[in-house]
Length: 262
Image 1 (cartoon, one colour):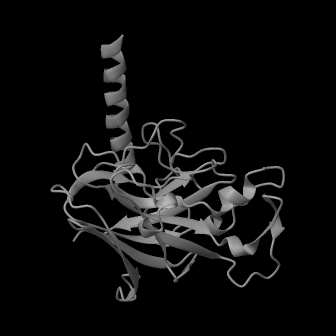
Image 2: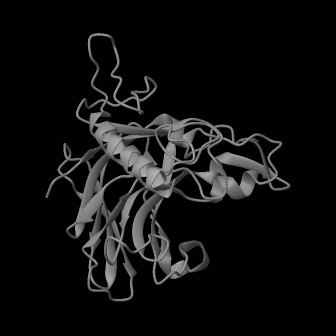
């Protein structure tokens, strides 16, 4: 029974990796692709046909319809992760209903965009990692008694997404240590392209935000988070799109991106 379970898990991982390579927004003559397990969701929008897209359905944490099975994104070998992102409008529109007693807490908590574990392939990311995280601007929501009761009319930051640098270090949690969580001043407009980069160094994680490739990748903002030194900082496993923390997604959310090879 134990052997069967291990083989099953390995098969799922292999198939998931194969499927992930096939998930693009390109369409065949029938209007969609049907790779194994995962599928092209027609709600995903991007202006660039080379982009890959991920989504989280309402009521779920993990991306691309895996249910309760964590996504497998692959390994990282090297000290730079760089991607161009296009944030879809739904990333600035999701909202918890007014019956959810944790609506305010879940609205201000950070969701995960991309990153990697640090300090070797076997080091858990909740011990050592660097990730970009995101959320819609909470200033556009109306809270009352810990619940979300509406949206601010004509909110000046409507259609914008906040991002932050988010790291674990020796098991220390970013949401309990201000030195491991730094919000960017720059807020991202949906449906626009931005380039994001994480540089993994022995004692630091460097987070860079640039304009798009088309606009020359001008540096908009950078932040550095200090880490305890480790020898295999340039090896880890990749981390991808995820909703939560605190609560599963209240609505469908999605993002599209293009990997940039250094």
